[in-house]
Length: 64
Image (cartoon, rainbow, N blue to C red; front, top):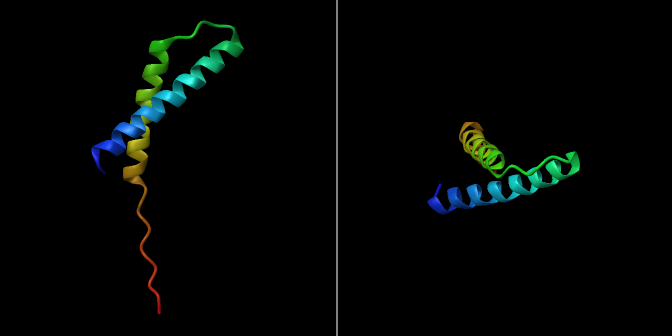
């Protein structure tokens, strides 16, 4: 996996996690916590990398 893929995964995870944290905190009437969203984004990014590594790659089908 190239470094750009790691960066883009981190970027989109941060973006989507912060949007989710903002909406959920707004709906619950609590203040938006930037650092909490950062921590969640880093954890989710690491989990995505681990899941991508653990899932086996499909074998190419043989054509007859």
